[in-house]
View 1 (cartoon, helix red, strand yellow):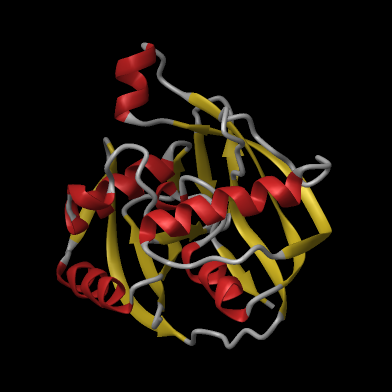
View 2 (tube, one colour):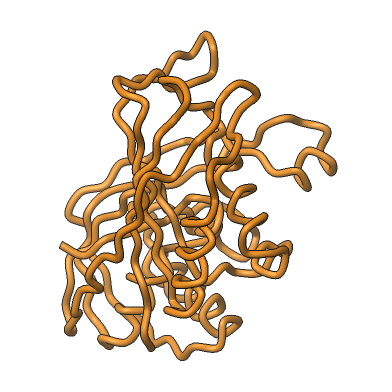
Length: 235
């Protein structure tokens, strides 16, 4: 399995980001990659994380940035899909992310895919969402966290055509995060504008089959990785 990781340097037309930026980035990726990677309830073979320096303005539901720049990190299980995405991003001059805000691609760099043995320290950079079969969020302090973590990923990777073996994990540090998010299907079904998701960030020690650890590294953790959640790195 040859994966790919990318860093995309972005320039914004103004010094802010909408609070629901994940949905806007996802819409841009959908237009590039096609609907087949964004079908309902189907796991995405990639994850992404938008890095920026700024502060939340709760009155205007936006992040105020120090500079009009951001970095989009992407990770792909399939190297070919990553290369295809990079090529389409290069040809993309800019795309709207808000009514009066556009993002342009300055540069794209392929990052080194790190080698993983039977033990690795993972850093969760964008909130990971682990849910049980009833869609209830499971957090690292739950006694069944490891079991639910493995059950979820076994199912996800089976749907994607990969073999996953259970791993053991121990948190070194973690923090609960509640995120506002939205999807067109959710708005149509519920009549509500936003949903609230419960996830976590932090550092974790994982042990297990190197190939399973590599799958988690390239795909990301949990559900909704194609919506900007669960992006991880290995320290």
